[in-house]
Amino acid sequence: MIYEPVIGLEIHAELKTKTKMFCSSKNDSDEKHPNVNICPICMGHPGTLPVINKEAVNRVIKVGLALTCKIAELTKWDRKNYFYPDLPKGYQISQYDKPICIGGKLKIPGSDKEIRITRVHLEEDTGRLIHFGHIGHSLVDFNRAGVPLMELVTEPDLNSGEEASAFSEELRLILRYLGVSDANMEKGQMRVEANISLKLVNAKELGTKVEVKNLNSFKAVRDAIDYEITRQTEILLNGKKVLQETRGFNETEGETFSQRKKEQSHDYRYFPEPDLPPLKINADLVEKLRSSLPELPNEKRFRFKNQYSLSEGQ
Ligand code: ADP
Ligand code: MG
Image (cartoon, rainbow, N blue to C red; front, side, top):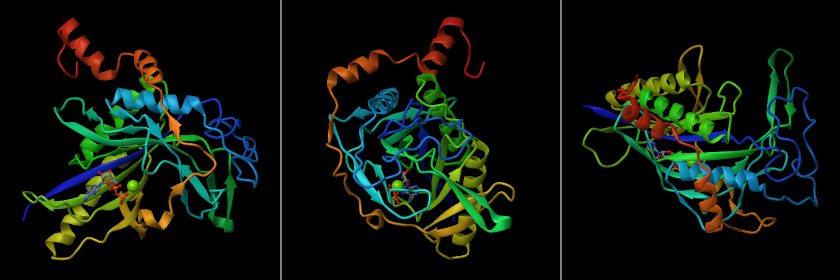
């Protein structure tokens, strides 16, 4: 039996704005002192109200335009509820059913393949836990809590670790060309989650997927996916079933490991954010942002090829 890998990516990138997503605390990923860029709003104190960071919305629109997405005329915010020590409010403001950007595509350089983009939405980042395993303590730094975070979701159009890594690298380049994010993976400014399943080559229906979280380098993206493809192939060839779950990736061992049963969207009790009105996106603003786009990597490659008779890769 011949199995074909099917992969969809969820990529988060911190946006490089002056202030956080819903308050005026500084957004500074280089800040070394913990818990200095915080305020009652991003700490979720009772009685505080969020205010939308317009520049963050503009940046996500630019990303959407660069990926030929449709920009929503009306977008809205939703609460995603869960408990974790790095989430001071007990919920994350995200976008559930009305993301800013819908549809779109990205061509993998050096290949004819175009990957369909499902959506790009805006949410807020969490704080950061720092673990001191040897003394059995963890400390929490909230400087990152509330930093604007875009999330891009692809359709399951990728078929190998190599392709997924090339896609992620091209997206990083676009984010940098647009100046919307430094997208430095070592600093955690860009984080990739890979959904991986196998199906029989001619089968229409997709197989059970495993989600591998927090891939922090292109090599990790490629290696984790390749490892999962091998692991799942062995399970299926042995006549067993792949378990739907969330897995982590150990870079040193080059192996993925089981973390938890996959949560479903109803586990989060999404509901419309009562403290923020839906947002109308004006067509004039979209056109203004469109005309501000720089020449994008793919356009530049095309121009160089024609102008200097270069071949792909030169
Ligand atoms: P969930 O609700 O579990 O988060 P989604 O439908 O939102 O799942 O998809 C999340 C990501 O997983 C997307 O990138 C999508 O393309 C990908 N995906 C969905 N089904 C599969 C599958 N069977 N195999 C691989 N990737 C998949
Ligand atoms: Mg999802």
